[in-house]
Length: 296
Image (cartoon, rainbow, N blue to C red; front, top):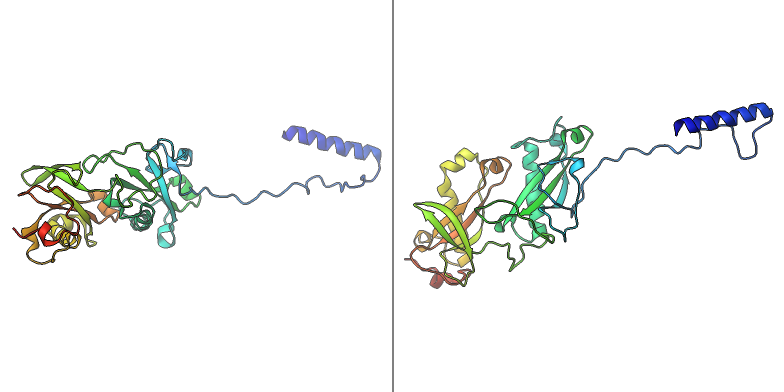
């Protein structure tokens, strides 16, 4: 194309020179001034509401191939944020456990909770914070994606394909919301939490997410009894019984806590379950009071 344009330009110039005449009406002899100026480059920024066939760890532009959320997919971008200040001034994308990652995770958790209609850890969901590639970061990209996926179960965190958006996915009555369970125990360790209907025979029920204080993961492991105490407070509120010394005689507690890497990235959400080992439950204990959860 460049050779063709050059040939035309030379030809026109030659014709004008040979003719020895002025420029025809409407021609100003300047062959370059009518080319439009190139616009400023626009950096790529992902859009919230996009669904993806796979779960991504890095937001490569080549990997941005969204699909219709009504089709089978494994992740959905529910929010897109932007890093600012010192977190945006680094030479590379935030690393695991860094200030930038914790900042992004906090915003993602807040916005995803709004989007799904409840605390995201109260359902079978996984939250992934996705940053741009190192090359895109060098080019000025400072966005981060808040991607959410459906997982198989509490114990099996593998992502499963689903259809439909996760917006409002944890509203009351959602099949994704954590409910009642039958724990499979080995001594004091929970090997599996088998979900059942709350009207079926069961021994455990999800009551809420306890936000553990901002301590190191090593300190958390040394003070897990603090998490159980926090969960007893959630049980008392959930069942509507006094939160006092009698709680240890009303129900036991089962907790699921973030992995170390999740903890370092700022996730402090401990999933709390009431556990009754000496009798069988056949309904939810929510709001049941002392008659539903007596001191034994």
